[in-house]
Length: 231
Ligand SMILES: NC(=O)c1ccc[n+]([C@@H]2O[C@H](COP(=O)([O-])OP(=O)(O)OC[C@H]3O[C@@H](n4cnc5c(N)ncnc54)[C@H](OP(=O)(O)O)[C@@H]3O)[C@@H](O)[C@H]2O)c1
Image (cartoon, rainbow, N blue to C red):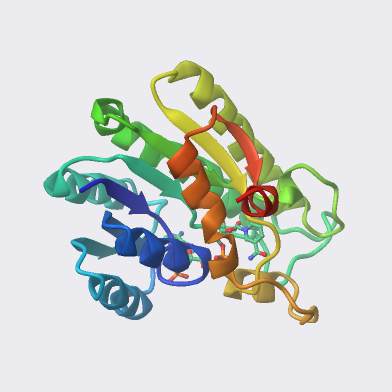
């Protein structure tokens, strides 16, 4: 069975992706900080008969990242690494003139530094895979200038560039930065609590990730809505 590590898999997009990959026969290593929600997600995933290692922890903890990769090695290796866990830097989001620098540092630490740290830890196993792939979950806030999304957006822009260079440096892998588009999740509600307009469920963008895995297009940055439409 192929093995995927998915960070931030207790809720939202990470959980939806985990459930779908499990139903497709993937073995999974999942993380999130909150142990209760992670356990619940792991039980739902295990219902598909998959092998799942659910390890509570923070992606900014190097020891935790090493545990994730060790668990994957125990399942047979790493075929897919999904860096999905994310920090906003301020909840709710605020304009740059008010953004606490500690919040910006946290967004960079979670969204950029930890994502690269996990890639570095997993690279030897990814290179051994017949179909190794890295997915960096990004955001249009990394490419467009939206008021109050500056700190988070800067971290996603940095993540995009790491993914782009990794794709060049690792031609044997696929490295996809994927913008899922707006989704009705806890992260969005924390970012903009007053904006309760309708948004797609995270499950609706999972087919975009499946298309990447099935078709293995060139490394690069992809928008989930376009991938889903073309499905
Ligand atoms: N929702 C949107 O509209 C939207 C739009 C564009 C891009 N995105 C991106 O989509 C991805 C998924 O977001 P989502 O909306 O699905 O968020 P979500 O529903 O809030 O889920 C986030 C997950 O990440 C975990 N997490 C957060 N910080 C973590 C950390 N430091 N270490 C380990 N796990 C951590 C959370 O669990 P704990 O809190 O228990 O750790 C949770 O499982 C993110 O990369 C986000 O930037 C979202």
